[in-house]
Length: 108
Image (cartoon, helix red, strand yellow):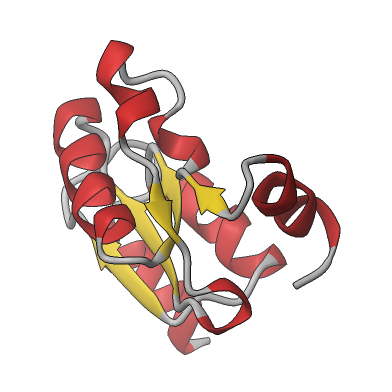
């Protein structure tokens, strides 16, 4: 593990929380798990509904996944173009670019 993720992991004493949970209220600080480190699968959760996005992200974080979030399809495409992900959890009806647009982008 290298870069900001490693620094974040080290600064929390081996505990990791998802950056997409940071603004989800007081309970966000409680959603910290022992990460499996460099072998953790990376998940991108894309949903325009903050409550759904946070719920889904928490489920994956609690199970040891490294989670990133996108608030719409355009944000998801930007993240997918810059970072590799093992799994994409995608809402089909989102503003700017819908889920089908994200899938089409991946297929091209």
